[in-house]
Amino acid sequence: MQLVSVAAWFGSLQDEIVAALQRVDATPFVRDEWQRPEGGGGITQVIENGEVFERAAVLYSSVTGASLPASATAHRPQLAGRPWHAVGVSLVIHPRNPYVPTVHFNGRFFVAPQPPGGAGGDVWWFGGGMDLTPYYGFVDDARHFHLACRDALTPFGAALHPRFKAACDAYFFLRHRNEARGIGGIFYDDFDEGGFERAFALTKSVGAHFVPAYLPIVERRRDHPFGQRERDFQALRRGRYVEFNLVWDRGTLFGLQSGGRTEAILLSMPPQATWRYAWNPPAGSDEARLFTDFLPVRDWLA
Image 1: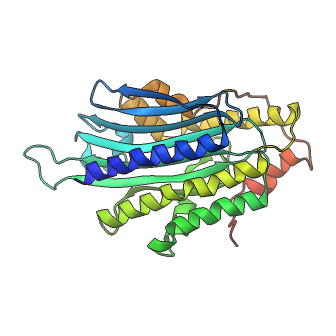
Image 2: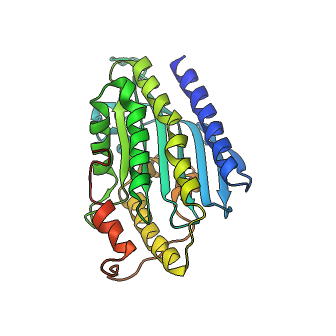
Image 3: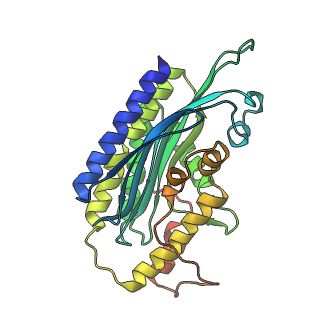
């Protein structure tokens, strides 16, 4: 019953987010239903080359496997070899206008059933969060996004937002460059505190706050004038996004290790990205301000 109710909610969340994005970009979403040979399947809804979103991908999946991959048992080695069922929604939006930030959201529920003849019962947990990756920073946008993140967690105790924000800052960090991917948000994993009903309610609250956290920023910045300089910087910063997803992201690693659908896994990548050797922004430029004023970890609500 737990899995059925969680799966139904994630399915409705995907539809709600797609409907909200469709009000911003009139380019129709393409809907692709797929099946996974090992078990389960999903629905991918995507805009490619839209008016506002160069790529907007919202993915629902409910998949099973015979044995948890290494990326899922790194923190729970006692579960190695167990079968598993994972259900969730994930999205990445890469806007066309460089003044509109990229955004990522994810919500997921894992169950590792007790194997026949085993002991200890089923093990389950929730995970998820959202984070913002601007190319040109605006303090108002950063505060708005982080306020929505805090509001999502406030009903569950004042301690959770500082904890989940710190986890987000630590996770979305390119260690090989000593550089943040963006300005963070909230991130949590292996979450089962307070029992199923509380953990599920928290995940639903995070999901409900995604649209009000992000779309007002899109509306504010979508018509901001830009030229080739801004597009070039956007492409360079998108390269950092690719580096993180391919080198550090546990979700990408889990998808590849578990035999996931490659097209769906790599939809998180930007449609265009570049790398430039030893490039540094001109001192005092708007591009330099991203590195000095926005990427370093800070309390945006102070």
